[in-house]
Length: 374
Image (cartoon, rainbow, N blue to C red; front, side, top):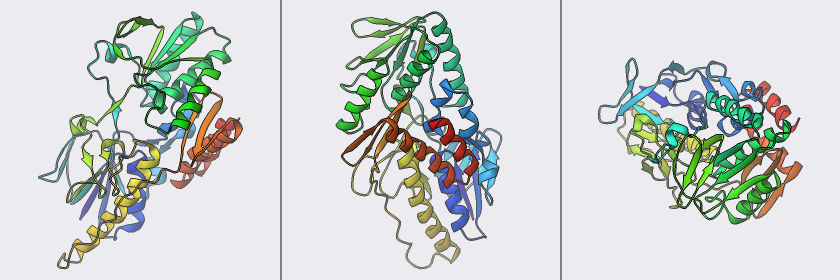
């Protein structure tokens, strides 16, 4: 009996660690990721301003997984009918699998955006953004961030703070095609985030639809916006192994009887029929549900599978609140209450440190708190 977890981000690592403690010893657990490190993705924007943060937010998989076999390889494709994973150098059969490969940046075939827009999904992306932005600082130039979801908001805030640190006169502008920043989130959060961006010196332009880009300007419907640094956080698509698709899964998080999709790799509709936002909080909670389901299915099958299949654990997402950093400030919501300033910053540090602690990286958790609040 082999259970395969594809990806070791929030969803994959949480699922794998749960399965390590749940699955019968006779079950084989394999984790596949193209990196041998787990990345705390929601803190990646911090690396743009403070490269040392990279050490706190990258955790070797061998340090946080005990029982699982770790395969460092790129997943090229998935044949669900044959129950086979195609890796770059091998084929891996499975009895049960979970696709936890996360999402990639979507460029929507906008002319020039892929060529000129810098994404933020990996450490090397953050280092490249920093390099380009520092050149803009030296020229007292202009930076443009396309997309004002949480990633775009946090990048824009970090760029503005980095410019202030260097006493550089750089205009940082964030463009959002919807009518508000953080458009997928509650109105109170949207309003507080916009206020924080403007207080940080970021120019916010909503109802601004990007149609393309050249080497020195972002093109909108009615005008162009010049730039020296252009960061693109305008959307997400599915992983290459899924053909760029993010399939819809319901409250059981199943693609089929033996394959699950967890986290940003899928568009999740929970057991109450509510669309679940792509977020670390959702991915972690989905992984906990799938761990319970897979354990039940494996035990049922190992016992002969003669009785009725086990009841599957339904996934329901109850948002605990939302949080974003904006340079040296932060915005957080808990229920109807909105927090900013020191309280929100402490909450933001707690979220990252809490995740690191939950996967056994206690030292890195303490290091991250020091970086966030120092």
